[in-house]
Image (cartoon, rainbow, N blue to C red; front, side, top):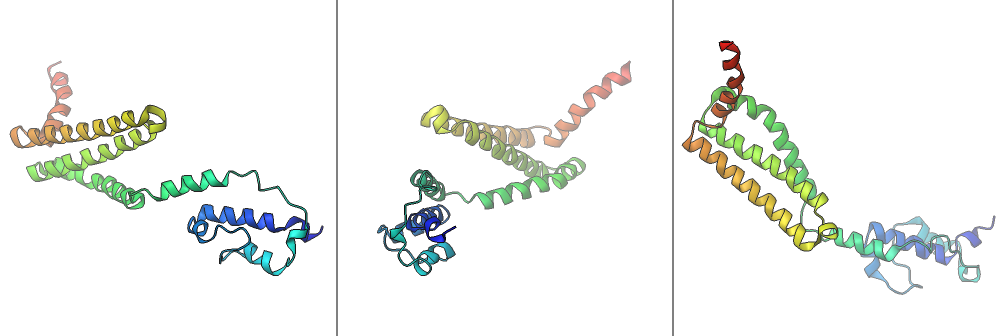
Length: 194
């Protein structure tokens, strides 16, 4: 098979477009189709060195059907997001792991500081979970921009009111862990009287 027919300039242009999917900054370097941007790809360099007169070969339309422009714009939109999702994911996992030690410690020691720490950790854990649900299922494309914003506001209000209620229970009531232990004791009282 003749390599020149398969690897013509159009194939290398499409490969360069695919490279912009990975690195959108390549798109801004050059809009001239005859000027190849400086790239680390061996395919781009191959078109300049192996096939000096590749424009004489018939055009290859294998990669021409890929929707490269819409994909590039979608990736650029996602890259422009202001949140650091990796750092948030790490914080979620640290908080989840810390709950394994915090819950038994708060149950054994029963003091207001540990109750407050437990309440904040549990509310933050559930807030991140509900926020992920709102992001996944209340997307603007599904429920509209207003519905998406309303879902996020409801998650924030629910988390804030839950934390406020738990803090009232801790500082004006018996305490969070005491209420949990009293809830566990409800079934034991009925078994003793029977």
